[in-house]
Each structure stands twice: as structure tokens, then as C-alpha cells.
Length: 130
Image (cartoon, rainbow, N blue to C red):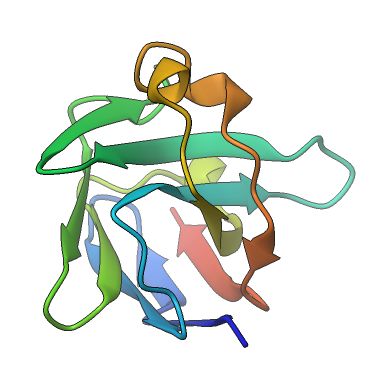
């Protein structure tokens, strides 16, 4: 019943910006992880950003490769996850995926790598040219 749909990908020159969106339906949990992953051809999937929500609180983690350039956020009213990508580089070129982990364990707050992602979107392509 849970569905994640990404949008906002496209082609942009280096230094440009894009804003990705992930619309979630059928996902109404009080504790959960939401994350952005990316994968380039021939490379391993990389976790870009994670938001762990436990009750009324949330914490955000970023990969070192995007820290200071990307900003993840979520709108609980709209049930939408966002990724604002600034100062894009060619190395950011990849397919970007949204993922969700329901019923988060409190321990995931401290170790978001352990979030158990049960739902994934289809991906949206981001291409950055120099």
C-alpha cells in the first residue's frame, strides 16, 4: 500500500541546482526513516541523506560527499521528502532514489545506517555536465 514517487530530476550544468521531491502515499508512521540514495552506472549505491523521525523529533545525516551542498527536508503534512541540491558537480550524476523505513527503532536515531528500508521509489535521473 506504500508508494514512493520521485520527481525533479533533470540535466543541469555544474554549479547549478535541482530540487528533488519524493511523494509518499500510504505511509503514516510516527517513527520512521526517510532517505535519498543514488547510484551511478557501475558504482555501488550510496546513501546521500537520511532523516530519522522518532515521535516529534528528527535528525538528519548526510554523506560527506554532499555535506554543505545538499539539504534534505520533509513536509509531514504533504507526506513529501525533498532534496535540495546546490553547487552540483559532474560527480553527482546518478539515479536518485527515495526510500522509507517504517516503525523505526529508537536505535536508528544514533545509527541511521541500520534503518531497514522496506519501500523504494523508481528513481529520478540527475545529470550534471561541466
